[in-house]
Amino acid sequence: MRLGIIGLPQSGKTTIFNALTGGKRPATSSRGRFEIHTAVVDVPDDRLEALSNHFKPEKTIHAKVTYGDIAGLDVGSSTDLPGSLINQLAQMDGFLHVVRCFEDEGFPHTMGSVDPQRDMDAMDAELLLNDLIAVERKRERLIDERRKGGGRDKAEIEREKALFDTLHQQLSSEIPLRDMDFSADDLKILSGYGLLTLKPVLIVLNLGEEQSAPDVEFRHRKGAVVDIKGKLEMEIAQLPPDEASIFLQEYGISEPSLKRVIRLSYELLGLLTFFTIGSDEVRAWALPRGSTAHQAAGEVHTDLQKGFIRAEVITWEDLISLGSLGEARSKGRLRLEGKDYQVKDGEVIQVRFHI
Figure (cartoon, rainbow, N blue to C red):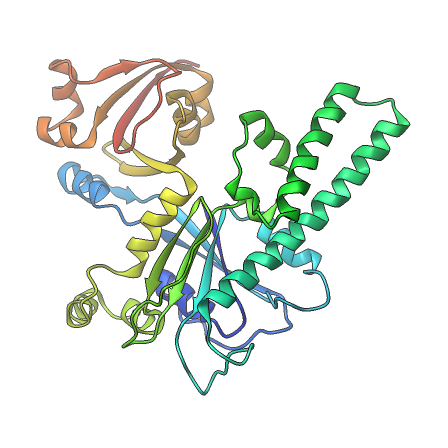
């Protein structure tokens, strides 16, 4: 799971990046320069900790999320976004759009004033314009391909042309693609184009220490809004756990921003977590909702997917209650499921396979 942290210059993207990753990157202006810095962090999961405490494996391995601190999104300029930046944005599974809500005379807002709604709308418009240009170019290529003939089946070309005509109509009406409904076949066609407004977005309102979240209108589907006191949480994230806990209580923060953002990110990207258990390791895996046991097996190892026979499945709560996989098996509580079984969040899966 790769999430790109985007926003206007001086919005506090790097501060949020540090808060989420425990990093210490200096929050310097990168206006006019293209930069990206990444960090891989563990997905906090109380269920994994409970399983680990119960089974006491040699290793406990969390699911991972990669955050990319992406600089250089200077909206409203007369030039298109640079290709190198678009390529990085296109590789992300979704975006964390950091919106500045705090006042700081030492770091003046690039638009002259703090206005979260304006900034949200400006970024939406920039990404939408980029997609509109990409869709127009693709439509022109499809028209040229249809005119020349040969190569692909004509019906396939017409189907793609109809799809991109619809995209063009929606984008021209200032509707981001994430607000549309697509069939599985449509999404398969679009998967290689890296359209930016097709990706889900989490709006992160970056607040000052004593500030409450402002009222903003989030106008789109497949997204959410969360508020974070970025600078404060960055400082807390760099403290030892015991000291961090004291500060969280003092400021009335129920849980670190990382946990909240990860949970919302999972919901945003349509992910679930399943677990595997062994004496050597207890491990959490991220999987798209609606995935099958066969696909889960492939996530663990390609050999398990190739030689898949059956999956033994149990909820993590039942497994801890029964004490062991052996006890669960002897009492008939391990369900045997086939390759088309849809995995549910929080299940422990053992794959029977043969190569």
